[in-house]
Image (tube, rainbow, N blue to C red; front, side, top):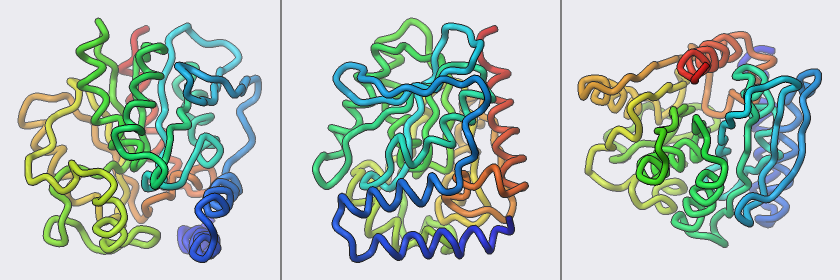
Length: 277
């Protein structure tokens, strides 16, 4: 698939959300994202469950070590679920050869950011993951929960971030508009839901080992690259992976988009190389 075809198909799907109720919009978004997902890897077991009262979906390869990964989906804090990111979580479990626990945290407007963060922390404190991986808004949640988990767990989890929003996002610091995510989307939708994004304070390094995946056409990439450079200067071990010509959300089409697939595999292999053996 060409990236232009992916964008056109995704934009057409998003147009259905504009006049829908929030519940219908969430269902449409889940169906849209799932339409790009490949079949589950052979031998993988998928099961819905509850951890600490929070719904989760477990993805377990046929043969895997006991350590687990926590995955936090994206969707701008208002949409997205374990269904929308099923394909991403299944691929992550397959490539890391670990069970992945995908969290179905509460969403806005019903829940505030603190409640979303609480859901994720409560699950992680039970699972005790060796890594946290977050996509977009889920990447921000992973960044904010990692330091809190570091205080409660003896082993600091590895952190994987997929085009997350960092602090200090303004019209001056954002990069150019990108398909599927504009500067206006960030300013009007993301910033009001996560107060820290408005903070002029520099985003602190959330972990001692971080792998980052970004895409070329995304207003979040420029501030993210600036933050990665600062973390590296501070001595944090940060791997950075960049998908040329790709857009925010194109991870859903990783099985169809060669550039995204290559960057995704590089990101996953870098994570796997840092995991305990």
